[in-house]
Length: 330
Image (cartoon, rainbow, N blue to C red; front, top):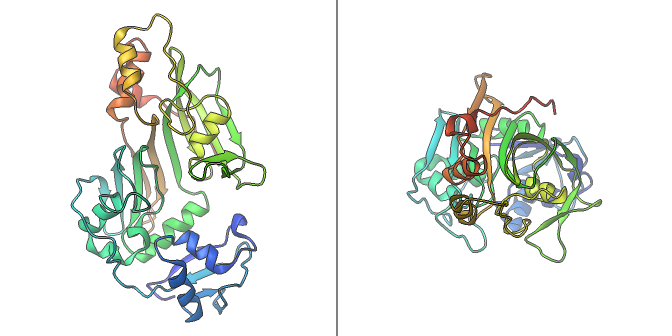
């Protein structure tokens, strides 16, 4: 295999879709026009066969992409303070703060995590999305993986598609849950509001496991584990079961103040201006060494202080971050 190649398998959701559409969704950093050129020039193969842009792919087929590796000059490196949790020759684990956009897009053309990664390591300019394996919403904080070379990018992408990477989140949900559970509801884009997603039978499969970590006054501190990784998945699923995430501007509800709440609690709840959702933990196999890797990130201050107030100050920082999530085999 060409060492510059990017490989991935066609998923069930991509079955019977056009090859140019599938590759565009996988490698969204590159334009549809450029991807079409690569297909026509033989730089994109399906099962090692030359295809047309209109060719429909089948689940399980291997797509091999050899990009014409030009610098992504339209995305400029920018010095951004990055919280690097781990880095070696093959990958980076970075802790993203809330408010930082992951990659450039409509309305956010610079000062993104991708700009910062390109400044941190100029070789990332040769990888799709500067090596980012997955993404988080702008106002969701927490851990992200970044590949530093094609071998790692291919391996980690395959592991993500095969659901071999464990992603665990923490959220503060409105309402007092009695127990955890699993939400298995398909998701699709909301036709009435294109920035939102909704539960829909004709959407893509989405599975979210959630567990009660601590019952609070009018709220619940929840651990969440993803089986799939759809856009806004946790936010939509929690809203669907009527336990929306505190502060969520798209899927949340009007702020609820617990009865007889102290002024400090009211002030803290009103200070939450984003969804109280944090990517807490990543577990995966190192793409080169084969070692088991595990990283966690303590809750950001806004969530931590809110939980402390909602618990009547019975929980401190250490106990909040040490609340365990039971193992789930996915």
